Amino acid sequence: MSKKEVSKGNEALMEAAVRAGCRFYAGYPITPQTTATEYLSWRMKEIGGQFVQAESELAAINMVAGASMSGTRSLTATSGPGLSLMTETLSVMCGGRIPGVIVNIQRYGAGIGGIQGGQSDFYMVTKTFGHGGLTGLVYAPVSTQESVDLMVKAFDKSEEYRVPVVMLTDGSMGQMMEAVALPDFIDPPDLSDQPYVAGTRNGRVKRAIFDTPWFGSSPNMADNVEQAYIAYEEMVQKWDETEVMYEEYMMDDAQYVIFAWGTSARVAKTAVKTLREEGKKVGLFRPITLLPFPKSQIAALSKNKIKAALAVEMAVPAQFYYEVKLHLNNDIPLGSYKRSGGYMVLDEDIADAMKKMM
Amino acid sequence: MEKVYERNKLLANFNTSFCPGCMHGTAVKLICEVATELGIEDSIVGVMPIGCSVQWGMFVNFDTFGVPHGRAAATATGYKRNRPDNVLVVYQGDGDCSSIGLCETVHAANRGENFTVIMINNQVYGMTGGQAAPTTLPGQKTTTSQAGKNIEEMGNPLNLAEMIAGLPTPKYVTRQTLHTPKGVLAAKKAIKKAFEIQIDGGGYSFVELLSACPTNWKMTPGNAVKYMNEVVTKQYPVGDLKG
Ligand SMILES: Cc1ncc(C[n+]2csc(CCOP(=O)(O)OP(=O)(O)O)c2C)c(N)n1
Ligand code: SF4
Image 1 (spheres, protein in one colour):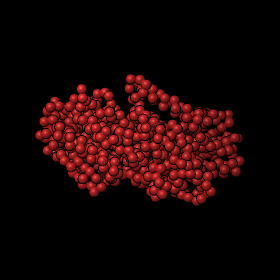
Image 2: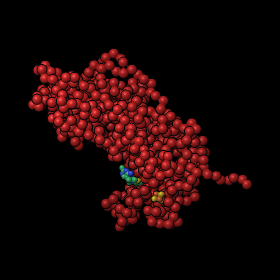
Image 3: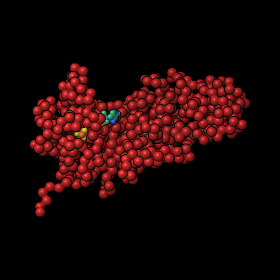
Image 4: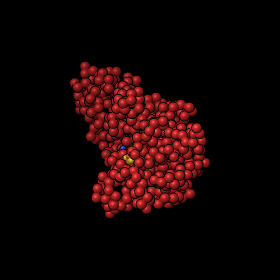
């Protein structure tokens, strides 16, 4: 861990990727991601890596997949509209078991939406990566510090499970100047023997890396595909035990819980502090992994202890709220406070919304 | 007895599943023969696109990787930039390369990526059952131009090799045909030249190969060859366009 320096969120996160051994970046400019792409346009060259300004997000994610199949730690960053374009290839990467890290610096809204921060890509990355129903891991850091800390892990896990890993930040986090301690430099790992890497033969049998697992132990292709998808589901289910990350703040004696993730959780923490000063026993539950979602941890909250809860997000219609509701004990009333249009959630509004439920 | 011909070692030891009279098989064989002649058996890597062309990955004894429909040149860019010592063959159909993937194709060519694109131009979407492609000839009947392709509605045939040859960056651009023995020999020479440029770090090369799809043209293989001679090669003249 280096000493703390002040840095913009996007730039710090890209520097963290370089330090994590990432040596390939392809991206297409989109606000609020542009500063990330600009940073790596010179930084990758400096470190002996490759930077490609892609002709589109479609091309960018495929360049990343290609770089991964060369055995290189690779990254792209984008925002909502670009992520939509990438989804076919995310599906292909899941199916072909090809790693790669995708940072989605969220902006709000549907279609072109707006360039201010938002959290409306929650469903898009937590339900399925593109068509087909396969998923990778999804990290949702609350701060620049947490995002840089998660970057090394994102690459490690992406390679361990051979799935794409998505990190969700947002426009406000990306622009914010913060003091941050960057991770130490690690050497890029040698991945040439990985089954998703092509062109490193040295006498072994040939590899045909393909998105649909037609070939396996059975002469029947349909059986091979089904078996591979069954194994995939088992892997994803195990993540519920091994990969869930979350933060609990003042939850020990809490009678009221605020659920929030990413930037919303940062604001919600202030609301919790205010409410605590007023003597209200409020805590914060913050998923750090959106996939796997902390299902059993939320389900374990007791109706005997928790009187009411509030889900906070920068997304209208709500998304995260419904996910919490799915797992939270039905006897605990759950409210929804949400903003869109580029408006931030406000700590005083969160506190008011929570108080209304008391 | 003296052995005068044997199956190339880079070709898998089973029959391909291409239709009778399809020339994909010829193209794949040429790639393998050239790779053997250049001694790049251990460094050649192939890209499997989407289309009938995807099958080539199954029929060769070297590493290949699959890509989404049309994205071959982008995936190839990410791969080759990081494995500059491997010889990368991006094998695509005309639908994959000149329709859905046109953007990636042109930009990779314009950046001068150091790989070889081999585009099989059979003027239809083979795998999906013979729909019109950007390469379909005026008046040609396909399942989506049943009265014959109307260029007022569907546009003129896209001569991709000429388009790419118009860019300043690509090193070698050629169109060859697979329907005559002479054409096959010239196609092999073209593939070899393209690989040699790549091995020398020379940059981007594009080899378009005219090919038959008797199944979707609804012709016998013999008539398909005649049709290529009399019609196809008129729209798509054979020869080097650049380099
Ligand atoms: C995104 C997407 N759209 C459509 C398809 C369906 N599709 C599969 S192959 C193909 C056409 C292939 O034609 P061509 O590239 O000419 O290759 P050929 O089969 O003739 O070798 C299409 C449209 C697909 N697989 N993916
Ligand atoms: S459908 Fe056409 S392109 Fe496909 S294998 Fe048959 S002849 Fe060849």
